[in-house]
Length: 68
Image 1 (cartoon, rainbow, N blue to C red):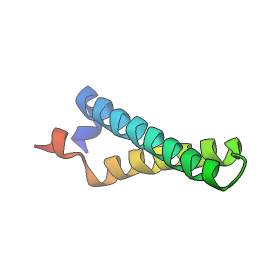
Image 2: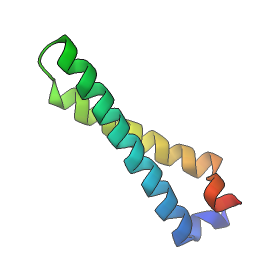
Image 3: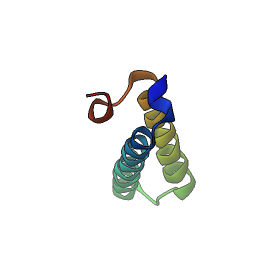
């Protein structure tokens, strides 16, 4: 658990979470625009949930760029 105390870990985990948030946002908004009107509440909440899951996964599983 020493990795959780390093700035390098948190920077890498935040970068992954933000990347995941952006990918999810674009994917859901793009798919929703093909179906009908975009429900922004769903797009934003789903994107934030994906980012939180990414952060949790980084904490539990680790990051190859930091663990190496």
